[in-house]
Length: 431
Image 1 (cartoon, rainbow, N blue to C red):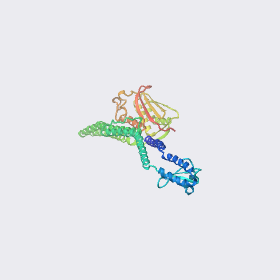
Image 2: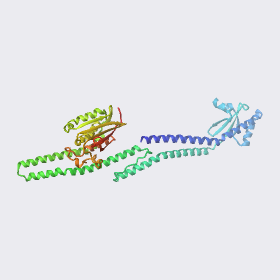
Image 3: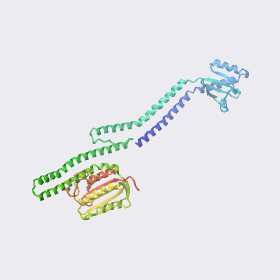
């Protein structure tokens, strides 16, 4: 919108300057072509020559005769009777004379060395109505031109707003895939990008809610069935030892259900934390080394070798808590499936932090590469490898990447031939 405001202001100022200059130039040309005062000034100068040739005592009478013959408001008067400042009195003797205005209209004063100390006064008539019409015409032209200039600027905006309105209507009617095709020639590119991002977030939330409902209803059936079986068996049994055994199994099933519900509810409220991110700076190498130390017990237990490769003296600017959660999830996922070795690589490219996690495990089937970041998704061959795993770890990684305007992807590792996860985080500020 800032671009739009600046463009609108610049266009308004430019149109006013250009139109004002054109109208001023036109007005000056019109005034020069129809300058009646110039003709009357020459006429008065000619009269002054004729009057100066007359005897001094007869000049007033001769002036009256000229005024009568030519039907002009011409008079012969003493210059000292004029209540004018010296600067204007000097202009009376200049070529063309001096034009003044009073309540009756305009009049022309002229004198020369032959007429001094007298001067000639000629009453002028100017067509005021014509001048007013010209002024009104020029005013209308100015505002019409301003409207044309502003319309030329606002028309693309109105078109893009119409596109935004149409897409918003489609989205509101249920077409969740409706998006705006962002144009480079638009004043509201930020608004269009924000709308697309909002629509994507809404679509993602609705899909996740549907998936959560279906997944929860599916996954909770097993422990409920186990509870029903254990309860029926306990009621039918007459052995106290068997009843105690069934109750222990039912308690384990309840613990599993409780853990499952906690995980589902935690993921359901995860989106609320997107507005609570706290950004801070830190040194990348030491930050990753600390995360590896936290996973050291798991690495030792599973006899895994984790190798870190990181750019020296690199700094990051992000929400360090959630970024650590994402990286830990990737490393923990790699620990669950790696055989011997894991490679963690981190580098900065322009303003983007790129983190890759490779392992030498079985990898992920290519047809599932776009599914592994969906909530509650688990490959059939990978189920139950980790305790209490509900397919939310990689979904949380995708959430964190999206919060930081980044991305996460998976493919086949080039060095270790297992899975290779790539996490990209936008890093807007540098220390």
